[in-house]
Length: 331
Ligand SMILES: [Fe+2]
Image: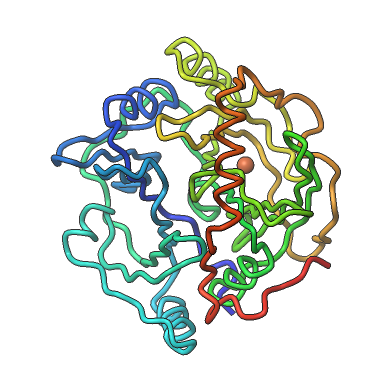
C-alpha cells in the first residue's frame, strides 16, 4: 500500500515562449521565478527549488509529471511494480536531477505521452522566496495541486494510476462543454481531493484538447491572493478561460487563465480535504455550483478544438497497456 505516500511534486513544460511565461508565472500568477541557467526557467511555490521546470523547445505542452514519494520503500515498490509489468524505468542524469531540484529520479512512460518521474528527496532552495503571493501556496502533504487531462481511454488511464500509484476514485462529474457530453473522474493519491482529473467524451472517441494536460492547478492559502492574481492576469492582458467560480465536488473557489502554451492554469482556494474514514464517491452534475463562466472564446478557438478532436479520431492513444491493464470501468 503506497496510498498517501505520493504527492505531485513538480511539472515539466516544454515551451519556446520564455518571455511570456516569465510574465505569466511571476507577474500574473505570482510565483517565484528563477532563470539563472540558460534555456531553463523555473518557478517555485515554496522551499523546493523547482515546482515548474520550463525547458526550451517547440512543444508548448506539459511533458512530464514529477511525483514525490515519502520514503525509499515506496520508491522501490513503484519501480518494482513498473518493471514487474515489463515496462523499463530510466535513471535520470545528475543534470536532470539538479534542474528539478531533487537528489535522484527515475522515469517511465505514462498514458498519452505524459512521462512519469518519481523522486523521494528534494533539495532545499538557497534563495529566499520572492513572490507576489504573500500568503503562500498550499503544498506539503497534498502536493502542489492537480492536473486534468482529456483522453479517449479514461478507464485505461484510471487503471494505470491505480496500478502504479494506488490512486483512489474521489467522485465523478458529468458535464456538457461546447456541446460535448463529458464524464470526469477525480483521482486522489493523498488527502488532496484530486491530484489527477480524467475527462472523456461519453459518446465519441474524440479528444478536443491538443495538449497532454487540459489544465494545471495550484492552490493559494489566502483568498486575497486568488482575487489579486485574477486581477493581475487581466491587467497584464492574459486571457481568462473561466471567471471565478466554485466547484461542485471539492468546493474549491477558483479561476482558469490561459497559459502562453495554450493549456489552462487554475488558481484555487480552500478545497475540502478528504477524510478517508468517511469518504463516499458520488456523481455530481456540472463542474460548478456557481460562476466559472467562459470568457472571450473565439471562433478560432472553436475551430482549433474541432481540429484537435478530428485529429484525435485517427491518432492512436498510447495508454501503456502493460500498466493500465483492462482498465477500471466507471461504477
Ligand atoms: Fe481543476
